[in-house]
Length: 281
Image 1: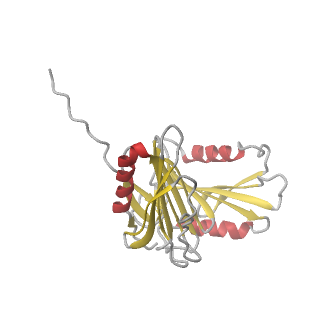
Image 2: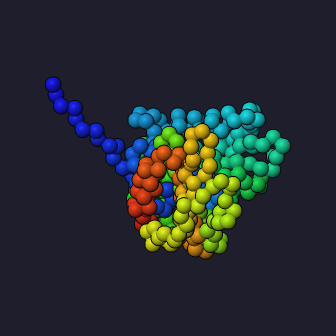
Image 3: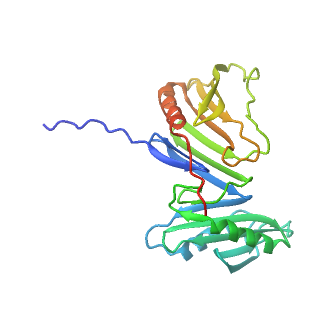
C-alpha cells in the first residue's frame, strides 16, 4: 500500500495594497479591494484570454446602470483622448447637477484594463477629462513600483489624495488593510477605558512595522454560544500630506478557538509589510 503523502500547507501569497507589498497565508482569500487617487475611484482587472476590451467596457457600463434607480439614466459615450472608451452619465434623477464620468484604459500589450470613475459638478466636464488623462497616463501593468491597483500600478510621485483598502477572509477569520494620506496624524485609537461591557484588553503596545511606529491592540470580546472573539488592530498615525507615510490601519478578528491561525496571519502581515518603490514615470 502506497504511503500517504504528507499534507502540504498552502504557501503564502503575495499581495499589494496602495504603496505597500506584503504576504499572507494562502488560505486567506481576497474578499474586496478599492483604490482612490485624486478622488478618482480606480479599479483594474485581468481579462480572460481572448476577451476583447470592448466586452469588458460594455459589462462595466451595464453593471453601473443596473443599480436601483438608474434605469434610463442619460448616457453619452465617447472616446477620451489618451485613455479609451468613456461615458458621461447622470445617475441621480433628483440631482442633474451631478454627473459621473467613467472611462476604461486598455493596454494593447497586456490583458489588463483600468477603470476610472468620478462624480463631478455639471459644467466641470472638461477639467475632469484632463485629470483622467493625466492619471491614466501614469498607469502601467505588471510593475513592482508605484501605487498598486492589482494588475498594474500608478508609477508617479505620491499625491496628497490616495486611499487603498483590501480585505481577506478564511471562514471566520477576517483581516483588513487600509492606507490613506493624512492631512494630520491620526492614530484612530478609541478603546482605552471605553471597552465594551465584558471585553478584555489583552495587549496595548507600540509595535514598529517596516520602520512605521504604530500602536497595536489585542482585545477579547464577549461572544454568544460560539465563544469569545479576538480583535486585533495596529495603526500608524501617518505623516502630514505624505503619500509614502500614509495613515495605515490593520484589523483582524477570529473566534478565540482560532487564536493560533489569527496570530500566524497577523505576524505574517507584520513581518512582510514593505513599501513599494515609488518609481518615476
